[in-house]
Length: 336
Image (tube, rainbow, N blue to C red; front, top):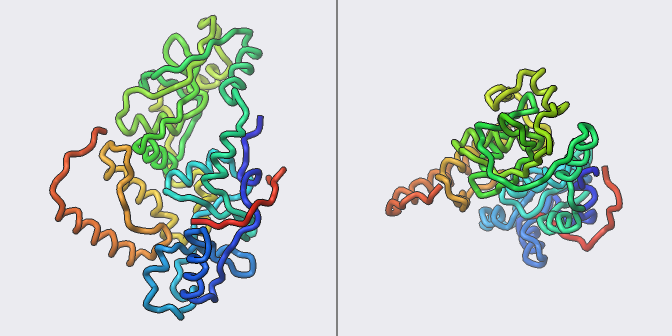
């Protein structure tokens, strides 16, 4: 069954502001609405995103045009992106909503946390696990039982040649914050064949984790060599150490997500995640950052410097244990 897409669940009629509005006008729009911010749009094109927090920095210049003070660029998604990938972006960067743009980078909708919840409620069951189970049984003449189990990461056998470094960083951050989406694996005599979740298990390995939550499919005959298993052997994949990590390119969905950000911010976005991951020290609670992804570098560095100074002044604390279809227009709402 095809994965649900952003286009199926996004809101189409979006309220927005223009770059020629003044700070006062935008402030009044925020105050008189139920939103915490608005996309900034000119001639249909998404230029950026302004939040109430950003506006507070310019209250002393209420007549200034938004275009003179706004930070250009923002995180975004496209209609054909899967709901799962959009959910990762929202979760990973602490957002409530994401602007949706078309191939010309024009604003076509908004996807929110509420829409994500709706997609999960409507999500068909039993889903991917049962699809894999039926396929493997039909192709190999076996019967599989399904159960949940923590599996040793050292016994994970990959079936994918390569993973992306930027996505590994993102998955490490998610794991640190307590998101433990299980792997899908098939039990073999010498370990567990990974069917889904290579970035997750590789990220966990890099974090020093010994086990990982998994949905295990166990064949009634372990002597039957599976087609997926033969392919892995042909590629020389025996352990996770055999998987190549691509460092020079972005994961496809991150390439889309950061396409409107200035180059410097797009390049440094995962450095912020790495810094946040280190700061978490194994805690599932996010560390307050006080900065915006769209904030200019000089201002961001200034805020981070002040935060570090405040942190030093505090008493030491012990670390915590470580494609649009069937889309129906809805009531207008905006992004945060």
